[in-house]
Length: 162
Image 1 (cartoon, rainbow, N blue to C red):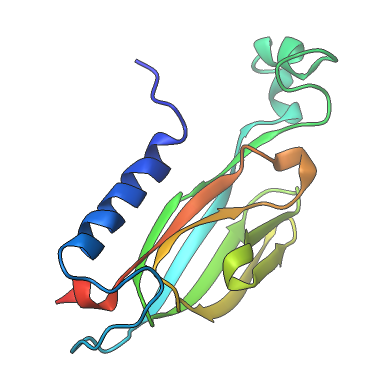
Image 2 (cartoon, helix red, strand yellow):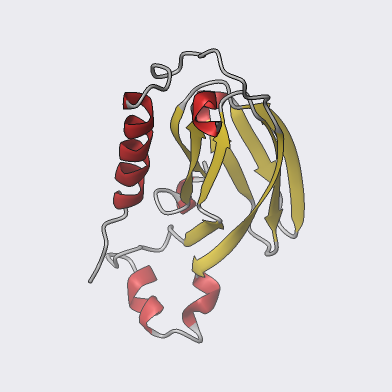
């Protein structure tokens, strides 16, 4: 059975809506609580899933990457692992993105002003505060990696930490 890609976003949104409905703060609003924001050290790795270099070992990719193929000659499929990160409102996120192969990537959360460049065969770090409650997509902003390379940051209300 094939599960649609948007299922994760829907489940995260429903879980967040349930938390808010049972007494959490309104979307994006701060609520008084006894929660002390934490510093979260998170690591995400970029992973090649279906890239041009794999055509020799996976012959079906030749057709997929051909002109008119399902991916075409200008797209590649990468992923972020893990693809879902969860923190609480007010937490400081110390993020490390590890890129173990030679294609460059970004880790971009537009709503939070995060746009980390991650060069090939290297890692990069950034920090930000998760100020707003919600489910925020992170992507690699390079056209050849869109729409496939994405994940979600789930920011739960601080009142949910009790």
